[in-house]
Image 1 (cartoon, one colour):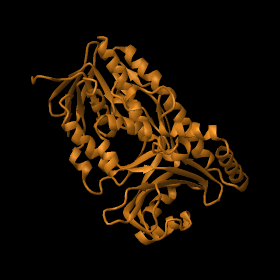
Image 2 (tube, one colour; image 1 turned 90 degrees about the vertical axis):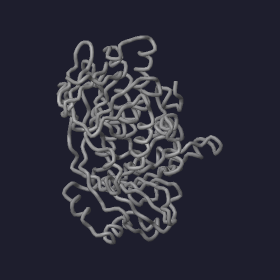
Image 3 (cartoon, helix red, strand yellow; image 1 turned 180 degrees about the horizontal axis):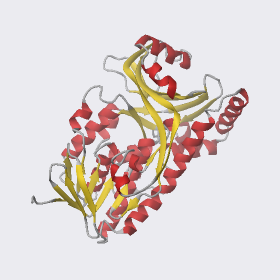
Length: 414
C-alpha cells in the first residue's frame, strides 16, 4: 500500500477560490493538498472561458497581499464609476470612487480581470509556494472523514491525509452531497449571455448596469487591446428560451443588438469573443460544515450575477476561513475541531445570506414588467442617488468592505 501524502488541509477543487484559499493558508504557514479534476493547463487555453470577473475592493486587497498585485495592475481595468439605470432612461444612479472617497484616497470600486488571466496568475503563484501541493488532474475515489483525520484515496490509488477537508468543488459539489448537506435551490427562467466587444469610444472606466424587462444588461470596462482598441465585457441576461438564439447571432447582428441597448453610447461595436450562454440559478447550503469538512465558494452558495458578487463571496469565504484556521493553529487547536468550523460558518453566513437575498430580490423586482413598476424602479434609483448615506452603504456592500473583515480583506497578512 503506497504511503499517504499529508498536509494540514485537503482542498477539493482547484478553481479560483480553491487556489486562492491555498495561498491564503500558506501565508499563515498552513500546508495544503489541492486536488483538481481538470488539467490546469487546459483552463489557460485561448477560448476556454471568455468570462471576466469584477474583483471587488476587499478581494483586490487580499489578492495583492497574496502577491497578485502585478496581475491587477498589469492586466486589470479599474472601475472608477458605476452607472445604474432603467434601460436608457436619463434617471441614473451613480457610484463614483473619487466623489465618495476623495481623489487622494480613491480606491477603485472594483477591478475587471479576465478569468483566464486570474487562473494563470494563481497557478503560477501556487507552483512557487512550497506549502501548497497541486494534485491535478486527479479525481477522488473515496473520502473518509474520521474522528482523527480526513483520508482520501484517489482514483489512481494514491492516498492523501489531512486534518480538515474543504469542499471547493463547485455548484454540483459531490463532496457536499456525500456529506448529506442539503441545499435550497431554484432556477431562474433566464440565462446570462457572455461576450467581449471592442468599441470606438473609450469606456472611461465606467461600468454600466442597465435594466430591461428580460433582465439586467451589464457592460463592464476592460483594459484596451494591444492594438489600442477599447473593449468591454458583456453580461446580458435574456429569457432562457431566447438564450440559444441570441448566442447564435452572427458577430455583426450580435453587436447591433448590443448597440440598441446601449443607445450608441460607445460608438461602433465589434464582437471579439463568441457569445456563450449560461443558465442562471440560485442555491444555498443549509450548513457550511460537517465532520472535518467545510464548504467554500460555489459549493456553499450560488447567486444571480446581477451585481457581480458571486466570485467575491467565495474569495471572502477563503479570507475568513484562512483567518479562523490560522488562529486555531496558533493556539494549538486541531484544524478539524468543530469549534473552528462553527466560527467560520457564523462569520460567513450573514454576509452570504444577505447578498443572496439582495441579488435575488433585485433580479425579481427588476424583472417585473409594466409601466407602473418601471416608474417605481426609476423613483427608487433616483431616491438612492439623492441620499448620500444610502449610496455609501450600497457602495461599501458592493466593494465588500462592510462588516467585520479579516486581515486579508484589509490587505494585511495578519
